[in-house]
Image 1 (cartoon, rainbow, N blue to C red):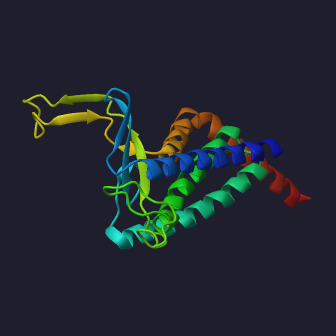
Image 2: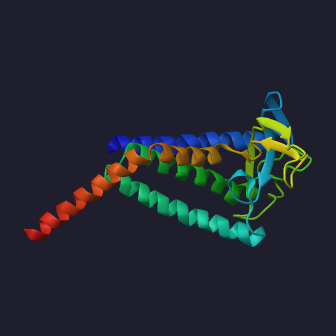
Length: 219
């Protein structure tokens, strides 16, 4: 059980450090829209920010942003409680890793939303300043999430005969994301790949607990 606690903490802390170090570097070294190319036009850092969810999706303006931030806080609290229970019950290690990845990813983006508006100037036409004397660009919980990974692996056009979008540009993969987003995505893939193994152990654990309670009640 101690080993699973260490694994969980290592994942959460490691991802949070990597996520925040990269975001702060991008924020303090790049202007909005600036790019650093690694493999031609296929893999690059492209600095952008979003006001909402993962992969640049947005949700309902300022009030939606506030609601999303509050939801993240409640969800992270619930997930931490759930993770502690999983570790105490000695549940499947892969499942514990998955939940740890989700907590790390959600927390990483929450940090941006909660604090980046307070500690940075904006990045439009300038490299942001950290801890500016005049204050940041937004209030608590209204900061923007920093995204930077852009991998338009396929760039082509829809054929002219294609319904509605004929002749338009086609890009795969279009979303711009960060390490926190990646952690959540990896968690989803792991749960899909190891679904049977994860939930077979959980069902076995539940049956064992029910049998124990049944035995106790008959004594």
